[in-house]
Structures are given as structure tokens and as C-alpha cells.
Amino acid sequence: MKRLIRWTLNSLPRPLLQRLAGALVPLLGLLYLGRGVECPVCGAKRRRFLPYGYVRSRSNALCPRCLSLERHRLLWLYLRSRPELLADRPRLLHIAPEVSLRKRLRKFYREVPERYVTADLESPLAELHFDVQRIPLEERYAGAVICNHILEHVADDRRALRELYRILRPGGWGILLSPVDPARAETFEDDSITDPGERTRLFGQYDHRRVYGRDYVERLRSAGFEAEEIDFAASLGGDARRRFALTDDLIYLVRKPVDGRP
Ligand SMILES: [Zn+2]
Image (cartoon, rainbow, N blue to C red):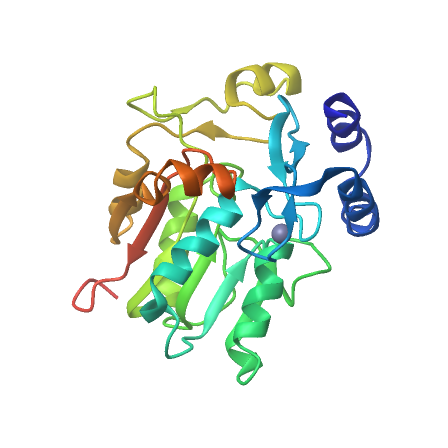
């Protein structure tokens, strides 16, 4: 099963994958009926989750009903634990929207659907299409932004961060998750490496431009944000971590200071 899923992820084009996943994954999920794990995003209970991963497959990762991964479940639990973040329905810009979270957030914004806006470089699932390094939106456009697993792909992540800062209103917040290697003190990037195999070996995935180290939070701050690194999974305790099949991803919450630079 692990090898089959890894092969599928690496062999099929992404648009086709996105369409297939919606139909096939729930079918595979029938093999996992049971009560060992629970998805906080969609409520599914299963024996365990499906394996998932482009390079190295992780077991117990993908929810067969809503396609949530560990970090999506963690983020949803985190948002639920901080209801004040979304209480007044700030205009939320969701970049590269994850299908599982998009569904829940749309529902949450059902009375003010125009305040939940999705964007992506090209995905047909998103309403706006742009490169995060050049966001075609005015200053202070959004009260909140969610942008996960994008910064490690873009050529100039500092520029992307400045753009995210610009379009947030003062006092607005963002969740900006990226893969961070806790064993590295400093972020590693080297644009001279172009061979896909070599990039996979060094950066973890052929289309990654860098591996963030423990200085990731400093990079967020250097764009002007106040930034917090939150080990939310640890605060939930072992039982919840097992039940929701979480990994040790951290939550990165940023805020644009009310009196910061514009
Ligand atoms: Zn689910």
C-alpha cells in the first residue's frame, strides 16, 4: 500500500491526482474501517489513516474521508482552541487551500462567504490566481492569511513574506507553516543545485528551494511580523496525539503589529 501510494504520487500529474483522490481515497478508506484514530477536521473514525508521502511514505497520515494530513489536523485543532482568531469573521485569504480545511472554513464563513477568499498559483480549486511573490491585492486587504507549505517552493521567500505583510491589515494575523528541520540551526539554500535528484536528496523534494532550520521564525520576524513558534501538538498530550495521528509539526503564528511599518 505504501509503495502503491508513493508511486501514484510521483507518477501522475497533479491536476489528475487531485481529481482521482476525491473518488479513490474514500474507497481505499473502506479497508481501514475501525476506531483507532479520529479526524478532527471531518469526524471520520478509522482503524488508522492511509500512508502518504512523495519521497518517504509516512504511515497513518492521510484521512480517507477529507484527505487531511497530520499538519492539517493540527492546524484545525489549533484554530478550534483559539476561537477568538476567527470570531469576527475577518476577511481570510487562504493561499494554496488544503481541500479538507477549505471545506470547513467555507462552512464557517457561510453567512459571509465573500470574506473567505482562496488563492493559488494555478489550482482550479482557488478563486484568485497569483504568485505569492507579487500579490495583486491592495494593502491591508486581509484580516487573516493562511499560507502553508509555499515558502519553501518560491525563489524569493523574503519577498513573499513582505507581500504577505503588506496585504495584512495592522493587527491582522497569519498562519505560515513550512517544513522546518529542527536539527538545523540555519536555513540551507543553494540555487546552483538544479538537478532534480540532487535537490530531492538535499531539500527533501525536487521542487523545494530550501530547507528551513530553527531560524525560520527569525525569517518571519525579519519581514516585520511578530511571530510565535507554538508546539501545540505537545500541549495536547500523548492520547490526543495518537488519536488524531499528529506529528511534531510546529504552528507558526504571525501578527502584523498595529504600530509597525505599513
Ligand atoms: Zn478527515
